[in-house]
Amino acid sequence: MKAITRQKSIEDIQQSLNGLDKIFVVGCGTCTTMTKTGGIEQVEEMKGHLQEMGKRVTGTTVIPTACDDMTEVAMKENEQFIRSADAILSMSCALGVHRMNMYIDKPIIPAVDTLFIGVEETPGYFREACAQCGQCLLGETAGICPITACHKGLVNGPCGGTNNGKCEVDKEKDCAWTLIYNRLKEQGRLDLMRRYQAPRNHHIVPRPRSITIT
Amino acid sequence: MVSRFKESLDSGKFVVTSEVAPPKGTNLEKLLHHIDLLKDKVDALNITDHQSSVMRFPSLGGALAVIEKGGEPIMQMTCRDRNRMALEADLLFAYSRGVRNVLCLTGDAVPVGDHKEAKGVFDLDSLQLLMTVRQMMEGQDLGGNNLDGAVEFCAGAIVTPEAQPIEPQLIKFEKKIEAGAEFFQTQAIYDLENFAKFMDYARKFNTKILAGIVLLSSARMAKYMTENVPGIFVPQELIDELSAVPKEEMLAKGIEIAGRTIAALKKDAVCDGVHIMAIGREEVVPDILATADSLQ
Image (cartoon, rainbow over all chains, first blue to last red; front, top):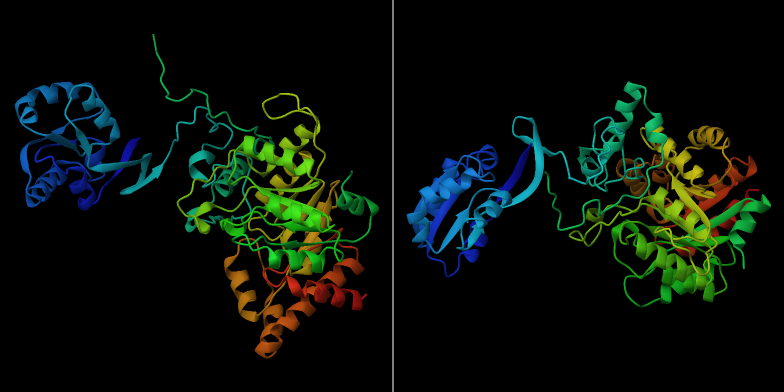
């Protein structure tokens, strides 16, 4: 499971950094390294872009896993470079931005958009796997999630837009409910698909979502 | 006041419905003209709900216009643009103003339409919307609260007899019947043999089936539909039949094909009626009906 990211355009990044001249760049050794949006190479490239914009790069680092508590250590190690910067440009996913926010008061500007939480199904192909809906249906849908795999997130079967096992929004995308049907049939569990699924509760954990574990 | 459409369905006669599309804008002239033209020739008129996810004047407004003209509307309602509260509220309002029929649809996906960045709601699906109508008819909303004044609708749904693969569609079809769908308007059908097979199966259930008749206005359109529209199969013979006539006569040929199909379905009592969709050529629906009648 990885946070899947896409780099913002250089124009957007430049606009976000308007008035901020000294920049410290942070990448992440986990998800954005794997998606090539915030690993060592991309951080180096970004440094070049920033210099072309006329910015001064006070330093760079690639934190092993930007979303965990080791980030605090990495921030401390780079304290002097961060102190002399006007802002941090984050090439980690949004979770990393949140984590850094806990330790740093300076503006943290994301250089990437976090798209979804995905799995790498085949090399280089990432698919959204879980929408964290709070009502896991996978036991009834042969392990295929209708919330993420169906464009409309339908829970009671396919819509009329399905065509030869493909989705109406994109002929390249599989129809989730055709996949679910085929797999349930193989498992001899089609009765599960005949079951009425009631409207979903969108407030299983009311937003803003948090939980305390003791 | 009960649903006149439901009375037609219950009478056992061959029921005919058609559809009109609200405009993009406030100029209702064409819509009102189509309502005038069709309201006395059909048992009920569907009013589409932002068809193909293109933003338009609402189906509820179109349904009220049909009522003002003395016609019987079937309000199409999709789950794409409203959450459960908005759908329930519109059902209350529609009922209070005399709407008695509702067609419950999931709705096309947002990206196929003209507001590609809009949020697709889909808080409910077609099946859950049917269940909502049932619950509101029993005097309760989806929050479990009592309504001060319930609704009474003849609620229907759609089915795609030519869908590939068909089995997942049929499971949903049966779930819709269990949820109380009193009638089905099908996606367009052209192959009568295939449709007869579907009806052999569908006859086992206590519901009414109106076959979808979509006017083929040209050979090009027929080819496009069979190649691109999910769940539509136009046999090659029909495409050839359209191609064989000069361009200016293709529409007349399409009217003939639609009329002939309706006559055949009625003659053999294959299904309970038809739902005619002329898609932008509503003015020829009376011609389709006249052709069907002449072949009786």
